[in-house]
Amino acid sequence: EAEVAQSPRYKITEKSQAVAFWCDPISGHATLYWYRQILGQGPELLVQFQDESVVDDSQLPKDRFSAERLKGVDSTLKIQPAELGDSAMYLCASSSIAGAAYNEQFFGPGTRLTVL
Amino acid sequence: EDKVVQSPLSLVVHEGDTVTLNCSYEVTNFRSLLWYKQEKKAPTFLFMLTSSGIEKKSGRLSSILDKKELFSILNITATQTGDSAIYLCAGGSNYKLTFGKGTLLTVNP
Image (tube, rainbow over all chains, first blue to last red; front, side, top):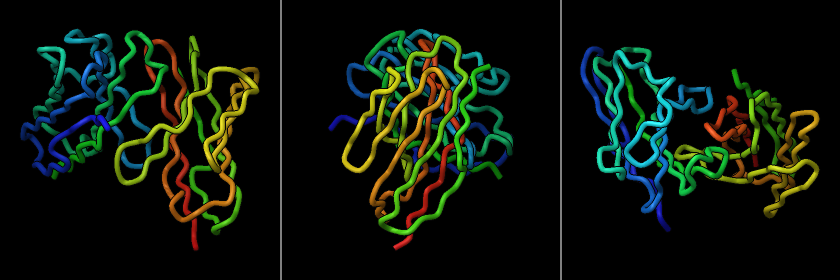
């Protein structure tokens, strides 16, 4: 069964360091989402891609976060510099249906980031 | 701003009990209500509801949507220890899913 792949699964870093997370969506899924889930909260959308284009990055803290999906397939989310408050689970999701975020999104296993 | 509120935030029951999880939403240009189950890994899809009053069922789980009252419930009958998880509710528009904080369900043997 096709799955969304993410790596690394766990990342521990010190504040002010740079970190990067990778996501490979289900093959053929044109829409890709990055979410941040703080402990005890639901996932919050950071950025949405349609193919290689950013559709929505209104909740992405652009002073330190960046995201790209250069060839419209896999994607990288970067934080530089990391802050203590960035400790969270970073989830990637994909969907086969464009322009319809209300449909089922398939989630990857996530990257748990701890900033010391 | 879109908002989804789940209750209770946590719940402890014994195996065999029936539970009802609640979700209320305020979502601009609402299109759907989704339920996910999250164990110590990725959220897994349970249901997507788009029409009021039509119950969706999968084994011991069922869910229904009330678009007039902006409300959905998720029922689990004859609970098992494997049902222990966080249950997430999300309101969907064309643009995004807005998640609630989740209900942490613990089923004790």
